[in-house]
Length: 165
Image (cartoon, rainbow, N blue to C red; front, side, top):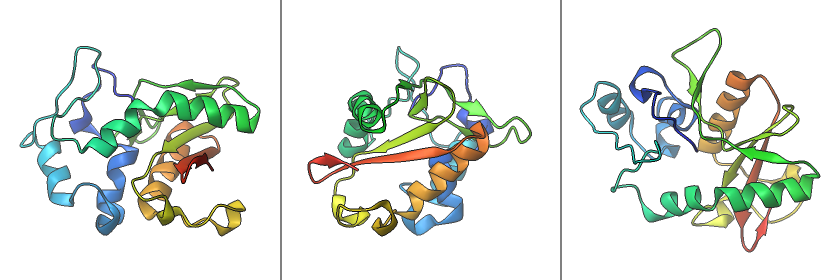
């Protein structure tokens, strides 16, 4: 997840935040916390590289962001394509209050990729065909919003139980 320093997250609902509205039970933040961030009651920390750097972010989320480049490279190898790590939040062309900061876009511009490094890989179901996967609502909402903002198909790569699926 990249966030450029010129993008004010208070002015849009990003793909990772949308689940707080659509399915609060599955969200990492409550609708109230999201509201507080949007009206500047909750601080957003930006580090020297223009990335969100909130010291209260749980370690597993911080680690997930840190290993994104590795997961993207491996997903590209498995899918036979190159993915470019993104560091920018983009608004929807028609609905500027909707935004997304994707993990990766394919080098050919045809696909997007969201990567996850969950604490408990079993929440995604057993390894096997994609049809048998159980995908948490928070990930479905995030991927759908990414597809809406970027108008392209999306992959979801999950590092679980020692493999990328």
